Image (cartoon, rainbow, N blue to C red; front, side, top):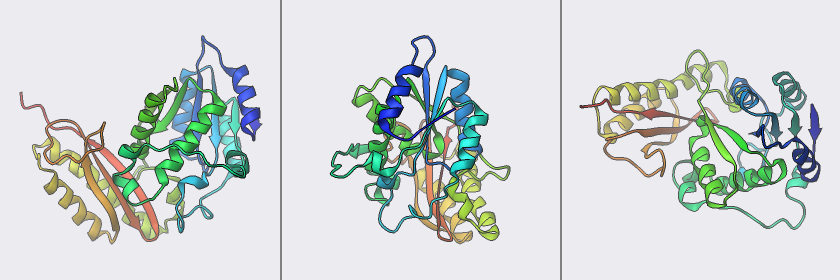
Length: 284
């Protein structure tokens, strides 16, 4: 497996790896790889001729006071995971390679970036869109694999890719959960044992909402309030609980078709996000 650390070297290798008869896949990550990341790499290796895994903690998507400096970094273990999973290359650029002195170009998707996490993390999605476009430019993938846990990110990047005619297929992959239902996240490492137990309230509330909608509830306000009650009981500090259209991320007041319920909440000092697909039963 190759380990590459500059955009120029990565592009040269990508040109060698690309083949018309076997797609080149990209799995963008910020490292601290867990089973969720492994599921993305496994999917990519099963569908592509070669796979690049990027490992880059992107400073542009962290606001002042967020956890950029303390974000988990397990680089050597991540490289070993990439080797074991059959990646052809690990792309691990330094921040100085991605954002050299005088850097002043940004990508913004203002509509999809405004609600949900966008209303609580100023500039976050501008940083996400910019770094992903730079990863696409260096890695030249045919397909890029993203987990549905970061659902707003997935929708936004699909729009960016379409609008800018990038020719990259965005492949959504299911959320991977712990046995107790907690969505896998590198930030779970911040949780104490007691906080880990309280964090279960997020997924419990989401799965309860799914059952409630399947049983016939249609009014978002009631479903959201039930979720808020469960999160409050767990002692969490809530950024948002919303039910939105899966494509536009616009708020849904009455659930007449598929919708996404999304949550962002703090357990202790750790901000966790999760979401679930809500599907009303067929009344016919």
